[in-house]
Image (cartoon, rainbow, N blue to C red; front, top):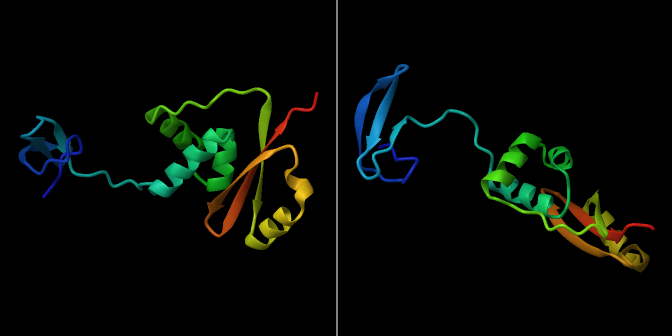
Length: 137
């Protein structure tokens, strides 16, 4: 049974064939649709990570290099979920990709975190350290 992509209802009827694909009409919301897309769907984990990294101040292309997801996809998610990045010109983020051992060594040195805020987020088997420092005047 096909579910309506508009309202997720299972109350639908056949409504013709378009381009050799069965077309359906939802009886609940009167939405017309065909069978599901065959394209690949990106896991929600990557969508959440991309939006999180965007809010941390990374650019679309930096997120693309880190996650391996197209920068255009990231841009579309930002538009779709209406994400607004807070504006503060006094700080800028820097980031490092570290494994668990490198991360523990990094935090072992107290000088690494003086005068900055930091966030650590998981990226598969690695960790990303995002650090904010004041612009040098």
